[in-house]
Length: 421
Image 1 (cartoon, one colour):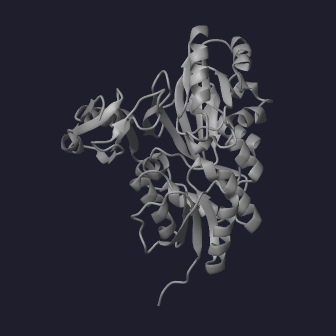
Image 2 (tube, rainbow, N blue to C red):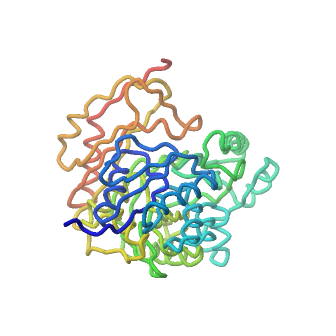
Image 3 (tube, rainbow, N blue to C red):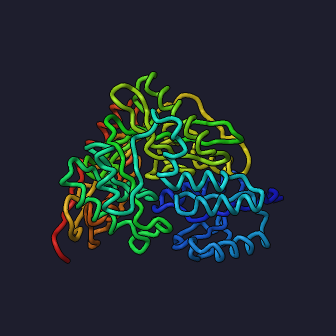
């Protein structure tokens, strides 16, 4: 006799890579749900026993999205609706509110998609945010920069995935960076900028170490799965590595946790996963970089948290999206990390060598390939995405052991890039 059907979850888009997609879809399956996927570009290799139907459409088109949800609800019992990336967060919140499903409010979702509104929501806590200004013209940028002080950071108001982040060290660098970013922050370049064309944040440069907080809010209660340590490039802040859980000292972790609770309250986040990014300064205080109303990407929540704790993050995201509290494990029994191999020049990727040697390094769990030989690669500021060639994931008994494994594995890999075709 078959088990009763608990209904389906509507997923509005899944993440970029095959491994992340499988983690998200199988999380629903292990919680007893089928999935109906709405996506701009659906993957082609979805597990048919879990994914009941696929609707391909423009997820920025509210009318098309609403029509698809209506059709799904006519055929299935809808237990929840989830998105795994930023662009559809507000749409999912709106649909959930209309159908009485768990999700953060539309107002909270809008704050989580707008770095200017994030900082405005914490205006009463200037100790938790960098000095900032929102600008759309060169005249506004030139006026704001001296008040903020050099070095400073330029970034899109609505960007994601470390796209379009510039470190500006002096007045001479400001105008070229502003003009390059203004040309980039256009929906015709990347649809993540829809509704925010040309909107740029100028912010105080924050010294210290970079981290993210992975967690959920359920019925007003904050659940923190842990804190991730991050490595980024100096000029464009591209994320090149992560280790979970953090090696921060206890007092600095306390500062990060206090920031997290303050941000969740100020944004009004509830009934959702969150991914908060912050800097911890030399004095141990934590300041907000941004906070998304969805789980973290870059394999942090699809793989690293679960590898370290034994409790898959995606399954808990499903639980929260269906009105149940997350299940938390005890202290992590392992450390898990990721390191990226990035292109060092623009051109055509001709070869990736040493993968077998890297896979033989003890502790390596996965190697994922983003750019295959024959594809073109580019580097910032011309492009912020195509230069990511591959990622290595590893586990170990200590923070240092994971770092050593990742270093050995990435050193075993070499890439050859040539100019032109």
